[in-house]
Image (cartoon, rainbow, N blue to C red; front, side, top):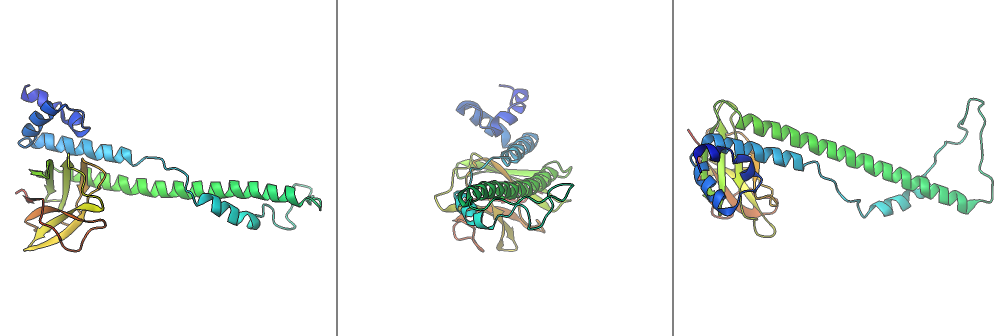
Amino acid sequence: MTTADLHLLTGAYALHALPGEERAVFERHLSGCASCVQEVAEFTATAARLASASSAPVRDPMRRQVLHRITGVRQVPPGAATGPDQVRHRAPRGRGPARWALAACLAAFGGTALWQYERAQDARQQAARAERQADEVAGVLGASDAKTRSARIAGGTGTLVVSADRDQAVFVASDLPAPPRGKVYQLWFADKGKMRSAGLMSPGRASQAVLMRGRVDGASGVGVTVEPAGGSPQPTTTPLGLLNIPS
């Protein structure tokens, strides 16, 4: 396999589509090819961006919310006009069950519409956040002064991409094994002899591009540790890997 052929495998590698032997050959090539590191990082970030548009099942509390709202549903306020002739229609007395059934239907529809609206709002906000983060990741990866450094971490590959002009860093993980149950990978800046938290990685994804939280601001390196879910204010375990800030 020629070097030109290897340059064409970045997309397949990012999507875990390479067989074992080709993957091993490509990873050896990746450790010394900055352009392929950048392409893999961009493909990984794009895949993460597409994954944000996922659906979710209806929540179990929905039924309880609907039943709770039935008695408070009022479609038309008392005295409201219903047509150009200001004609008001009143439901006949003595039809309690029918009125309750109608109210239940309206409440169910109204509750479902409200839930769908809230879900749509949440999805839009999440998509906007994901898009902003993806744009920032792409900005670092595509920066003219971007520099990279790679290392083996816990059986996977970690690549640090730093832009001095933007004073930002992106950590790109490939084939990182899942952390133990109830644990998460946490990123740190090594800064003047101390470790400064730089955010958490998604425990459910073996490959991802993470915009590190905070500025590089003179840090000398980046570390990865295993921490309890939610992260820790300071490292509680020995770093799985340390990467010097590329100069």
